[in-house]
Length: 88
Image 1: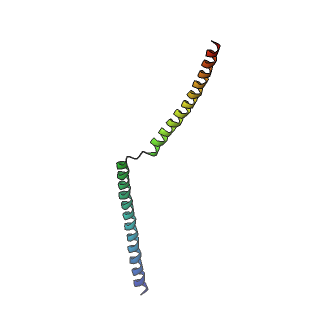
Image 2 (image 1 turned 90 degrees about the horizontal axis):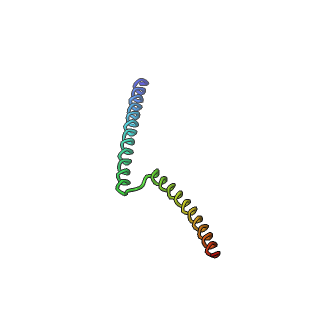
Image 3 (image 1 turned 30 degrees about the vertical axis):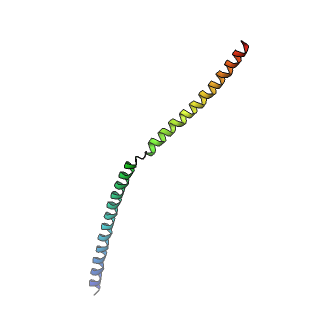
């Protein structure tokens, strides 16, 4: 009886191992399908990628700093011009 019981347990363990492998395969397949569908949806929404967003953000920050610098320069030039006009 011990041998039959062990064989039965061995078969049951083998069945569970196979079921776990099948479930894992199903999980991978489901993840792949879901990821593909998500990518399609994002493409249709015309969503910007993170890298592109960060690049444009850096450009905007640089442009803003340059704009502030030029604004300060214009203010200085206007002040000098007003001083020169006051002398004339």
